[in-house]
Image (cartoon, rainbow, N blue to C red):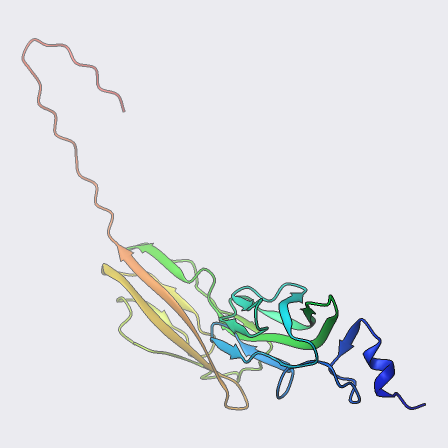
Length: 219
């Protein structure tokens, strides 16, 4: 059966996927967003047809790092967690209490080092530092590259698995590296990590004692 415009207008919720709807909110382009972890994005506010919308909300909560502008429905930020494909409902409320809705999908893929900051001791074997990978297929070899090969002496970067390992033999101030992974399709994904190597020095204490005065040393 046909859906006429008047039947849509009497509804309290208007989904932009109903092609005959003459009121509602609609985001431009593809509404199935595949986002890269740690890469900033901006999604333009939706087009509003019908009564002006004064407040927008989205359910469930967006991935960490992303935010919806409650005044215009635009979405922006930098996703900092991986997400499988999830459906989100954006609701715009009008001054007449009518609610317009739009359906969006978000997936967050890529690589990430967690934590992204490492402080390690000189001459002490470090625990292997490995990336997390989500939603992408990497080749078996030469999948990773690092922005600066000037790693601390005896720290090794694995181009096949993105792993940092070894025993640092020199001190180094904190330095940030960008790691790039290239998947089987040629798409690239980046993550950052910082590394600091410090040297622990133990100095024997020096005691100055007075003649004929008893002392009590506590270990």
